[in-house]
Length: 503
Ligand code: ADP
Image 1 (tube, rainbow, N blue to C red):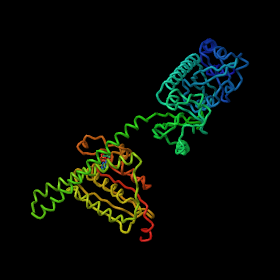
Image 2 (image 1 turned 60 degrees about the vertical axis):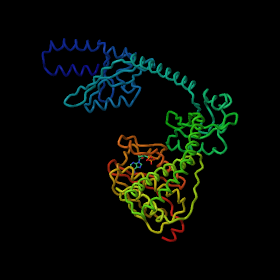
Image 3 (image 1 turned 45 degrees about the vertical axis):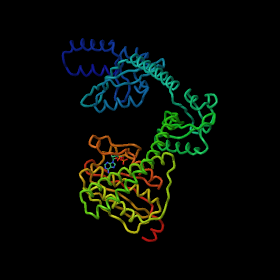
Image 4 (image 1 turned 135 degrees about the horizontal axis):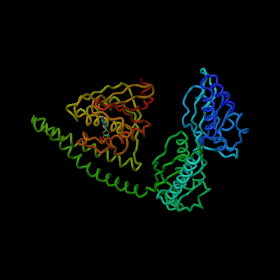
């Protein structure tokens, strides 16, 4: 009651109506003491100097066990009380501040605290803290959350049990820890045959290194999604699977294991194979007559040149152009089919890059009358690469540059020395590419979905082929582009040793 006396004395010294004041003061004191809302006061040293009956009852202490002790003794979280006192000292509001108070019987009460400070001449005299018990609400919420978590857990377990995909978890060392029914259906092993065993029982010998690589990628924080590979079943059959792998972490965020979702894609792969075979056969069959048509066109062109029939020459020129376009498309389909079958062959030879670029630019000039295709070559660069395939890369980039610059403009194919490498680029002033699409351009069959491009023909395989051919040359196609201003596709290749000697 030390604090309360202080207030009384202060009121006395104010020399107001003494009789009335005393009655009011005792009434005031009485109502605070018996108020149903728990109240306590804390002095500037953090010591409880007064508490009412409701506060003592809330926590179960007798007056002498509570008053005169540091308030920090009764808070479960020291940082909370320190923060409340700091705020009050700095005249900041403490409004519905959540805290946990220790009861005498060892339980914790969830409360919210509202506080203000009595000051005299600006000096901190004591706090006036009003405690509201919210334990019941919190307990109810906790029960609801626990129920929700349990429901979620049950639902999750039901999903894992009933899904079509194999869900397997394993330790970082590769020991299988869980195995769902779909894993049993796909791989043929029962859970009791795999749990505790090493994941290597599923991995064919030629893919053993994959596990190490996947683990490294996960440790670097990379995601591994839709990773297509092959796995071996209990009966020795190889199946195609698509794996999505995520790290399992402990409460501190450390990776303690891996969870794998494996989807059996054997059926899809077989369908793809049938489609590829079909495309390869059709493309091959189309190529022969088209090549013959091309030769006949060239014969006719030679004749017409002699007779000087400009009109028919013009029409034949356009026919030849279209036939070339078809040949290129067919060429792309054949390359795609070869690539999918893993049959792409890189035949390296030493050649002069400048000459190849000149040829490509010359061919590209025939494709369009409204573009100025220019070469910014670099002398004396010899490459040890597959000349035809690098030619295919350059032609793909040039014909895209033309296709996607419908208003014409300059197209520059160039190269620059970069120490041991040469940088090759194709720049246009065309429609450009939204950054949203730039990362996906090199995926198979990816085309930018834009109404303005609907009339531009193509299958979305050109850049995929470019990327794959360059991958086989340890290089990577990249793009810089801005909508409306044009695009710059570029890649680097190693110069061949001979060219280093020459340059
Ligand atoms: P295709 O041209 O047959 O659609 P590609 O794989 O060659 O297939 O290109 C994929 C997509 O990339 C194209 O559909 C187009 O939207 C975009 N693209 C490629 N090159 C350019 C370019 N130079 N300028 C603008 N967009 C381009």
